[in-house]
Image 1 (cartoon, rainbow, N blue to C red):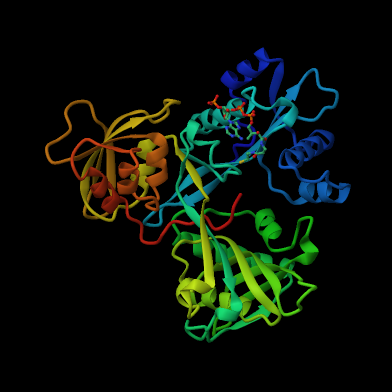
Image 2 (cartoon, protein in one colour; image 1 turned 120 degrees about the horizontal axis):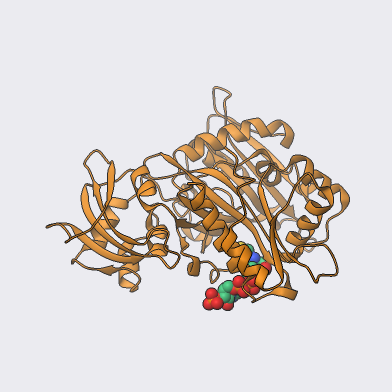
Length: 434
Ligand SMILES: CC(C)(COP(=O)(O)OP(=O)(O)OC[C@H]1O[C@@H](n2cnc3c(N)ncnc32)[C@H](O)[C@@H]1OP(=O)(O)O)[C@@H](O)C(=O)NCCC(=O)NCCS
């Protein structure tokens, strides 16, 4: 189902209008308007002004999205001063069920128009539109961590920026029985999509990626595609089970110390993931392999033969924002039975209120509004929607948030009960930034 033409949120539109600004949907079929929007998006992140060839590539291959712009009637050029785009993709929850995720990207405000509330209007507009369309949760990745908590988003997955000194590595992982081979990114695409689908099905925090996003990450599209190399791992039966894309930065001062930057590495099996890592770590003339925002529980760290060969720096990755609390909590599965009363504070009112979650021994949870007293024996907590959104995938520990003063225990030990009940089978991870 497409939400691309979902109506503009009247509250944000009114607010912007009072400031002499217009919020509107951008018609991708209107080449001039869409290209002006793309240029504003790129400039918003201090990117280059794009060449016609690149703009044509995006127009031709990028999937349909809900594209919005904010326009200044007094502006000298017909370029938006604010941009966002959004789309809906399935998000894997603990236990393997998926819910539709309202994914938000390209949030920019022109430096000439900053700090006048344009981003707030855009973000609130996205959330109200998602809720009006019945999408239960929204998500994004952030350029800065200080931006999105105010709208009820919380950090739900951590990625580790990893830098491995390859000369220290003595591979201790298993030998892979399959084959790693170079592949052309166009030929890889269908295999990559199938591998990603199998990988995300068992990965809480996994989402579906469209052809264009996969193509950008594997060198099929994008400004720097000529620099990207792509390999695929096939298992002993010849079935493609993983792929990696990477770029190489030469070190002219020392030819044995080149740098490899992993663009993306996905394995549908642990065997494939290990084989691809090993391939990268054993490249001749390379001293350093860098990878961006890898899973916290990445097995390769235990296959290097020297844990300190890898320097790992945690970074917030997927930010989530629950809009429909019962829908999300009833979709995920639970690791332990419990009855938990949640008193949720939500500045934008989507999910505010008191709820009772009853997680059964079959892993299924039921949520109902809580009107009276907290039932005898229930764990009870008060928390902002941002903290519930952070913990919902099981990757951020409620006990830590309680100790940090961000969750309030109404009954002793309630945060630990929440933690054990919310625990995921695998540390949640967003496979690719969006
Ligand atoms: C980040 C950005 C979108 C903010 O746009 P903006 O229109 O200036 O933001 P607003 O005026 O709506 O500010 C809303 C709130 O966020 C705060 N805020 C905005 N940008 C901030 C920043 N960089 N650091 C800290 N706080 C910030 C504002 O102070 C305001 O706070 P309040 O709710 O307490 O009043 C804009 O600066 C930008 O385009 N930056 C470069 C691109 C980028 O990083 N985009 C985010 C992509 S994830």
